[in-house]
Every structure is written in C-alpha cells, then in structure tokens.
Amino acid sequence: MVAKVVSILIIVLIAFGAWFIYDDNRFERILPTINSQSTIYYNNTKPLLVDIGDNAGLKSYEVVLNSQSSSLILTHKDIIKPQTKEILALNIPTSFMTAKNLVMTVSVTDTSRWNFLRGNIASKNIKLIIDNQAPTVEILANSYGITQGGSALVVFKATDNNIKEFYVATPYNKFKATPYKKAGYYATLVSWPFSVSEFSAKIVAIDKANNNTIVKIPFYIKNKKYATSYIQATDILIDGKVATLASKDSRLAKMSNKLEKFAGVNEGIRAENEHLISSLGAIIANNVITDWKILPFYPLKNGAKVASYGDLRHYYYDNKTKAVISTSDHVGIDLASNEEAQIVSSNNGKVVYSDDNGLYGQMPMIDHGFGLYTLYGHCSKIIKPKGSVIKAGDVIANSGTSGLALGDHLHFGILVQGNEVAPEEWMDSNWIKLNIDDVFAKANMLIK
Image 1: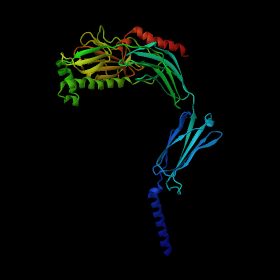
Image 2: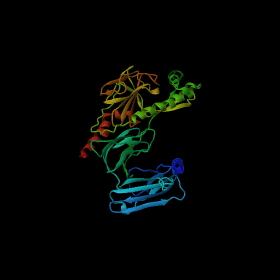
Image 3: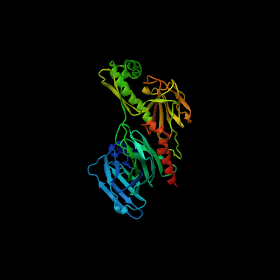
C-alpha cells in the first residue's frame, strides 16, 4: 500500500515538475530569429549585415564561412548582458573573394533553460555570391536634343549576370526602362518639366551586389520660355462652374468667401485631378517592345489652338487692382472647332479612364504603350468606355464644356510616364521622325 502511495506521489511530482517547466518563461521554447535572405550577392565595399534576435534574450552567436577548400570562423561572441536584438556587420576576407560555392552558417543561442539548460538554438545557411563587377552600359541611340517641357528617347544596352534594376534618372523623375527587341536591350522615353530651367539625364544600372554604373545621355539641352497670362475670375465663373465643383467637396462647400472658394477649386481640386492623371499615366507594362510606331496626333478636325501648353495663369477678381487670387499651370493645349465636335484617337491604344475628373470634366484617357498616354478633357460625351481597345481613327468622344470650361473646346494632354509634356511635339510629324523613328532605326542597326 505504501509503495503504491509513493508511486502515485512520484507521478504527481513528475507531472507537477513537467507542468512547472512547461509554464515557466525561463524554459520558453521560441527559437531565435536570423533575418537574412537565403542568397546574398556581395561586394567588398560595405560590411554584410545580418539581423539576429530573440524574445527572451541572446546568449551567444557564431558565424562560420565555408568554401570548397577551407573554413573560417568570421565571428563568435558570448553575450554577457543578454539583449533581444543585434545586427552583425560581417566582412569577408579577401582570400575568400574569389571562392566559389561560399556558404555562411549563422548559429544563435538564446538564454532559455530549455533543452537541458542549453537554450534554443537556431541555425541558417546563407549562400554568398561574390560580385565585384559593375554592369556595363552602352548607349545605342538617343534623340539629339530635348527641349524644356518636351520629350526625348534613348535606346541602350545593359548587361550583368546579376542585374537588379536599371532606369533613366533626371533631377526630377526616374523613368522606367522597357525591354526592347531582345535580352539586354532597353528603351526609354524621358521628359523635362516645363517649369524648371535645368536638365540632365543619365542611365543607372545596379546589380544585386549593389555595384552600379552611371552613364550620362548626351542630349543637347534647349531652354524655352513659356507664357504668363492674366485671367479675370468673373462672378459668372465663380458663381457657376466653380460653385458647382466646390459643392462636391465638403470643405469647400462650407466656405463663405467665394474668392477663397475659387482658389480651393483652382488649386486644391486641380491638384487632386492631376494626381489621378499622373498616377494613371505612370503605369507601364513590362512586355518586350519589338516595334513601336506613333503617328502625329490630330484629335480635332479643323481644331484651332486657343490655349498653349505651359502657360502660367494668374487669376484676378477686381479688374481695377488685378490682385492675383490664384495661379495654375496649363499642362495641355486647348483646341476648338464646332460645338460637340468629334474627337478622334490618331493612334492605337486602350482606354484606361473614362469618367468625370473634376476640373477636366468628362475625360477619357488612352494608353498608347511605351509609357505614352493622351487625355481629352471637357468632353460633352464619351463614346469609348474604360477598357476599350482603340484603333487609329476611332471616335472616342465629343468636345464640350464639362468641368471648368466656359466655352466648347477640347483640352488635349500628353503624358510620358506620368509627366505632362508638350503636345505640340507629338503633333509634329517631323519631330516624331527625328526624335523617335530615326532613333529606333539607328538602334536597330546595332542590335544583332
């Protein structure tokens, strides 16, 4: 009987001990973390960083570097004062920089009393690919020059076994490069904002080890002076179109000062409308371009230009003092002909937007590929809905007075990778030949 009681007591004590250990935080069983990619591309310009951590505290770590022929302890540390996180900055010895099949093993132990007081142990093998070679970049052809507010084209070759990214950089934008013809070749349309006087462009290629190559594009830079105009904000405009637009915005609708309300519409709502346009125009497909042709745009038959691109508009209310109450940039051209005239797409494309857009009114927007978009504002009627595939010559809408327009006209805009550019260039067959067609033709002769 006594033996049976003792046995039961032992079982209870064992169960209690097991429960105590299981529930005690000192015996936690969460493994330490090793935050690193499984494969790292490395050059010797900066230390290699590995982030380790543990919820209870780090006790020790060791990093061992292994090649086919040798092994080396890069670092080992017993942590006297446990901490929950540490970033290891590791330098690979020069003797290993030419080695193949390098593997770095990171082992981390925490302060837990689990595992017979040895703690939880985590280990990770990280493959190292040594790469000290920068990408090669060769410009095949580019537009001779670029005008302030205008566009240009560059075709180039970029090669690297471990390429990560490549793009064309200007002081104001980063232009995505589109694969062209075959592997390793790329083409990019770039633009120069009309509101700034300085411009430069360079091709940037970066590999997975962060080696980089930068090549300047030899554009001839031509500045252009854009007009400034003064326009009276009349009561008819403010109490009519502006009031209607303001009523759709809860903040502006409550404003009692109509001049402030005008500025809120002309600047605040306009900024929202242009952000939408820019966001839509910045979407660029990743597909390879094999042949890209564009015809001069002529959206409105017998359309006369009534407002220019790049015009800085100053609005005033009092005709005597002409004190400026608001300003805005006109980032397209205005064309007018007959009322509700047919608007035609001069090139193939796809409708990406077909709805109201505030100051722009009813506005279809078309993607023509290669980062080139067109938009058509103030329409009275949109014929082609979003998602429609457009053929050159298709009627897409009719001109009108929707949005912030007093007279029937078309606001015609062109974007390059989300940036509004001078439509006049893309309406000029000679400019397209010299800056687009001839550049592609020259590059094609060099692509074998």
